[in-house]
Figure 1 (cartoon, rainbow, N blue to C red):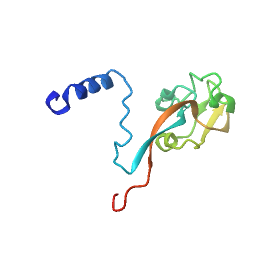
Figure 2 (cartoon, rainbow, N blue to C red; figure 1 turned 60 degrees about the horizontal axis):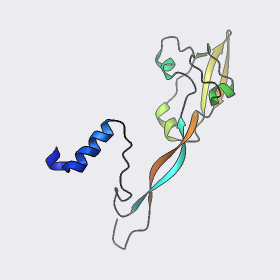
Figure 3 (cartoon, rainbow, N blue to C red; figure 1 turned 135 degrees about the horizontal axis):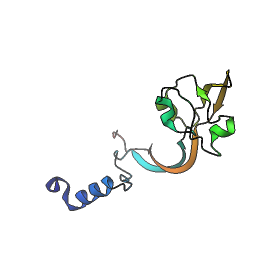
Length: 133
């Protein structure tokens, strides 16, 4: 590996394995793209995500002040529906509608499953020279 990556590459790989943030160079995807930084809110259900794979799907670990709590979700609510998290995580504006059962009655709670804003790296297209793609 050292012969292929060199000392700097091996050190960078070790840093990444130890949790360091690896930031590719701005031109990592070629001359037609540039790295930008945007503030994006992290995907956050507002409760313990293990609930979704549990047998009873009873909400626990509700985060105080979360979007879920503000929308009315409570510890002890039973989640009755399933939903695709992957698509939701990629869309900053995607809301989540949970069909819940509380006290023998069903109701829906809709909220934006997002938490704190963090800087996120993205690549934007930029003009390329004629004939370049």
